Image 1 (tube, rainbow, N blue to C red):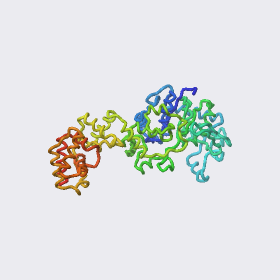
Image 2: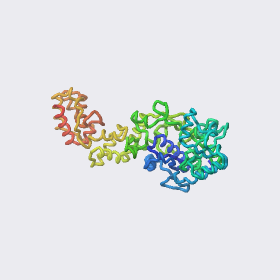
Image 3: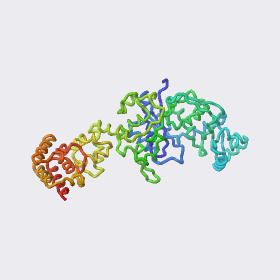
Image 4: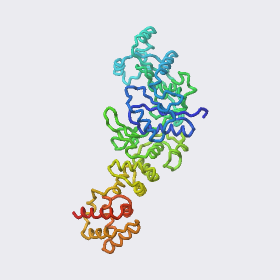
Length: 502
């Protein structure tokens, strides 16, 4: 690669950040790191009708949480600014006017009402080669009529004049040679009536100004590619055009169609990176972060939706991804989203995480749930004991809360059918002679007393666990007892016997 690699993630600040968008940002980031390049965040905020307050800050926070912070952005400008399209407005009209003077674009004065009439008249109406000469534009009006309309500031748009019967083709880094017949491409609007560009003009002008060398974007943008390639050519910039890479779609779990927020709502999993609160309705859409995903696991999972390194390896750190990522290993086919697999990644990451790296998150979760954690040494021991049992970060609350407060609710239904006065007697005696110096000795003493009293140890283990924990979960029951200590274990046994006897 002759030029220094410069890639961009260019989201619109219109709401929550879909995991497909995060994956596009991730692949941009990984490609930049692999080639010692620059990763740019450019905010495409030219559609003022869809602009949402707070969405830009939210996007920045999502990328920061994932650990893929851009090298250049609106909050971290470099030499290629401004980094918001709305701040580049004057440049777009200049290039749109240039296209008109060179014969590659035209003014269109059709009102929304006139366009609606045409859509009713013509099935599947497209403003383009077949219809442009029936419309009110600078191709059908006289020069003086056009000048008068412009002088009186008549609302208008500027449209590209797509050529007839041409074949537009380009090399896609993922899909190889891709070609389009211009006969099926309509005359896209380049500049809207409010003077703002559409995506089609803005993406070309901005990529040129920012010296973008490689453009990664979703497969859904493939139909727009011929318009963009024509614009690079018509503006005289063909030699500076970035190399294209259209990423495979992230599909619904059943593989039929692109994964949407509605699918997440319907099936009970998030599709946004982080919680998004709609400023108009205050409705909260849940994100992976708040559901309890670690950023490392989220990024790992996303990277393998449509890419692999050719081996059986599934767990990758961000540093490993930076080293091993290559465009050649990106699949052409869509990748089915599997929430169970996403949780598997998180479980694996929790298991291999150090206690220190988990401590703050677990402490915060426990305190948020109303538990007081005064002993960090105890917390660390508890985390080490239970982390293999946790799939999502909130699981730490259920799996550890009984270390910080006695159970108030017991799974009595699992005990009472086989509960007897003799069992109660066993536990009273056991509680009065507790030996909890270490789990091995504690278990030996428990089993010895059980045999002495004529019980099989197995039939007493479940009641003992429920006495200490409240339910049928948790690590080894003698590990729990040793950590709780003699006094607390004795108290919990006595409290539970009262409940089981009732």
